[in-house]
Length: 204
Image (cartoon, rainbow, N blue to C red):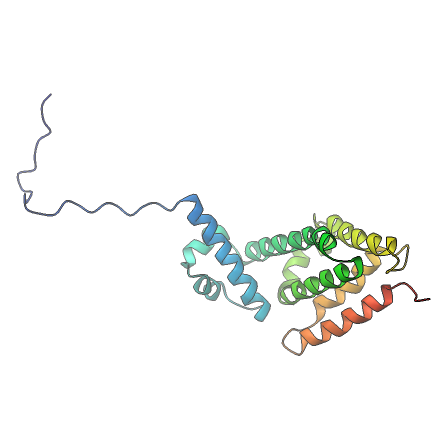
């Protein structure tokens, strides 16, 4: 076999060429996506007008990386919404496995209130993208999570029987209208106490 021709201009004492930078792996992409979502959650909870540039900086990724994952602000907001609402849905049975029904309900409501601080800043985007909730694929599962908590409380006598989970959802909706910048956390706690007290079974 004939050896490959050599470059007559090459310096034989020069260092070999450096290896090209490694291409991003799937794990890199997943890690970047999670960092962006975490940064967006924190930034949007603090201010609904947080810029994508600020979110990328907080996530320690380039703005181009952010746009590869989320080409528009709406895409980022909706992905964050889907991520967080699914987590809330999944938390209902997990809390019931760990706590008495009344405690599980209160803890779940507190997590909903925390989520509400995000939704306050981006509610208009979510409302528009889901046609005011009519096209929201998570609506039924979310109502079912409430129904699960209510049924467990009714079964052990801590909650009133025959509560309508959609009525409870309407009550919780006020949490998404509380401005977190003006004593929102304290107000949400007071409102949750009112809601839970209204759901309790009468004490004999």
